[in-house]
Image (cartoon, rainbow, N blue to C red; front, side):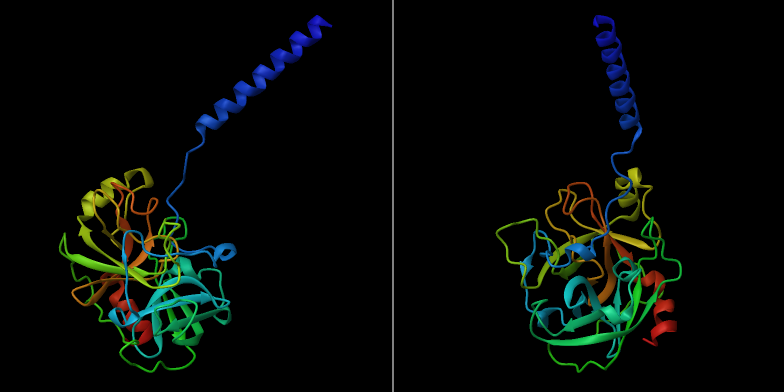
Length: 274
């Protein structure tokens, strides 16, 4: 009996040691998550981290992209028929499941809700690297412009953004604060970050590409978050970025990563006429 117990203990120790060895070889993470609300959680999004409440008239190009009438991502009005958002917000979905709410500071009420007629994702979108994270949405009906619904200006193809340029990101993404309401639009002002510095910051995740732009403070504290994906980053009145991904939200040393709009200006024009 004693020998059997000793053998069983030895086998148990070997199994535990093997499991620990395998666990130590697994990566802690593969890549930061994109900043959208997964379909099972589309009702729990909050807002910008470290920002302030705004009225939609201050960012009249802002839309709430909705999956079965629940907020999923942000987006930007390009003209009366087209909206730009992130490809990771629409990949795998059909247009019939999507609507956009425009002209409201609340993602769940007010304004006008318009059905999406067609999704045009960038052909080079890579779901594993989140590169070319752009998606154009053609609307079923034309938008009526007002002080709360206006198109945003676009940069020219490959137009540069100087390091340190102050930009405004807005949306209804996670605030990481249980005391803040998730009902009203928020915004944060963040400086753009040098491309090489951002690439170094994300070297653990294979860096960033030329289609990406970074913005945020080195000490963190202000950033977009889950639920803001696809939303606007605007500098000098132009849409320079689309909220895309990042490591955590407002983490020190990890600026937010945006899809660089100037990199695909010609593609936007060819597919939407804007």
